[in-house]
Amino acid sequence: MLSIAAFLEGRHAQAFPSFGSERMGAPVMAFCRISDRPIRSREPVTQPDALIIQDPTLLNQAGLFEGLQPEGYVLINSARSLDQLGVASFLKSLPQDHVLTVPATELALRYIGKPLPNSTLLGGFAAMTGELRLASVLAAIRQKFPSKIGETNAAAAEAAFEQVKQAVAQPPLEHLCAIREETHVEAD
Amino acid sequence: MWKQIEGSRAIAETVAMCRPQVICAYPITPQTHIVEGLGELVKSGELAGCEFLNVESEFGALSVAIGASATGVRTYTATASQGLLFMAEAVYNAAGLGLPIVMTIGNRAIGAPINIWNDHSDSMSMRDSGWIQLFAETNQEATDLHIQAFRLAEELSCPVMVCVDGFILTHAYDRIDLPLQHQVDAWLPRFEPRQVLDPAEPVSIGAMVGPDAFTEVRYLAHNKQLQALERIPEISGEFYEMFGRESGGLLRPYRLDGAEIVVVALGSVNGTIQEAIDELRDQGVLIGSISICSYRPFPLEAVCRALMNAKRVVVVEKSLSVGLGGMLATDVQMALAGRRQKVFTVIAGLGGRPITKASLLKLFRQAKADALESVTFLDLNWNVINRQLARENATRRSGPAAESILKDLATLPTKMV
Image (cartoon, chains in turn brown, cyan):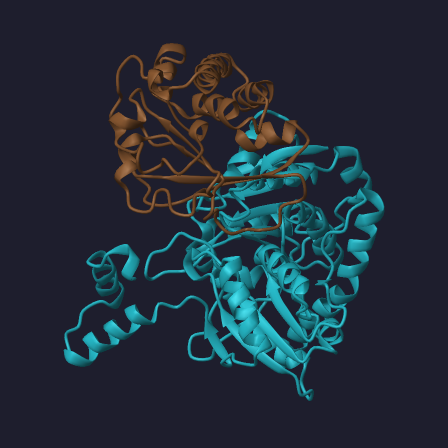
């Protein structure tokens, strides 16, 4: 959906998953490149400009932040603050508005009725990085799910966009915590 | 029409535009999305006049495809990895009978050990079967090659495999210019079969041929592939006239101007290779590459011409002829027979190991310094190899090698391996 949103803005994009153990709950990774020129590289992204972490239980995984660019972005799906998650000091070298949490699972439960935070996080990503317009993200979600599911997912993404936009506009970031924490997120 | 679309879906939609009349399907990762997509298009009626057959195995899939094609209908299937091996007997039969089936291979490794990821071992195992094998560099090319494949297969009455890197292309969402139905209809002629099983005009197909004529039948198959060498670039040119983009052909050169080092590869890794070449060219290294699209027939003359001025040739290949080295490199060496250029084999990307630009840059710098071995295994972990060899030397009952290596890797901190 991220690559479709970029495509809708006339940009080049490439998105691909990394396959691993085929079981529910196993950690999974997916990559996306966005560029203004055709993308030829076919290697996995090892030096990301942005990391979207869908499941905060992965934060202890070794090497999760490896290769992240000095001006990079980190968006974590959690109702807790960075301090509470214990990553604030670890990520303090990044510019302040570049590291945020957003309670995407809670928003997904509220709008979609299922703990599926991925499309919601894309709304947060658009607000945090400014790399994509919200309208493109919403259009991509509706294109991917051309039914009521698309509408509920778009609503959740829009809510995440607003929350992150507010957080970026008025520090400190910690006030973003809300509702409750979902400890296990179903891997997509 | 431009779309941001998964490679598999783009292939499915394009195959549907070629209006196949029979599709046989048995799912195996990573080609599953293609036949699933086609199944949907048949069910929704978008692909009309097509019979979609779920069969019990890959052997069944290609056997049914052979039967369908012999009745004179346009026939398609897809497979990968062990699935291709399981249909091996039928693969040879389809070619031996001269039936113009088009089959997508979502390239993937072959076990054991079990591995679902990308390399070229599967289609390489069938390179001598008599099928034409075309390799796609991008998802755009994967899409376009299917239209060209039907044309080529049916003109020559010879089956064609379109080889598409599993996961790397099949599962990637890319920006693809999908053809329009009226363009495909105008470009791809109606299938006029050379042979038809028809109760009204009975013939037998697949009779026993003894020593008196077998060589002649085989020579004719070879001759057909030599004709394909002529037709592949022409068809690519005709495709350009209708669709306005370059796809297919025998091979594609990249920055060969004055190149002293030329890299040769098949498939999607060419994109990463080109990125590495651009970086080295900026630093003044005279390096270029060729992406080979037509692996069978192998374009000996075109490869020789492209490599004419190279001092060193580095063949990067995603398969291994165990006990020899590279299959593609062997073919390249044949193209350069009698010349003095050095040809180096680099075995890379086996079982889905990423081929990174960083590793390629290091490799190409070694080539420039003339420090390459004749056969190199890219990013091989010598620590793991040496520890396993030591275990095997220490005890007779050293156990299964793959499991020992996994145990070894699991007991060490990630940084150390």
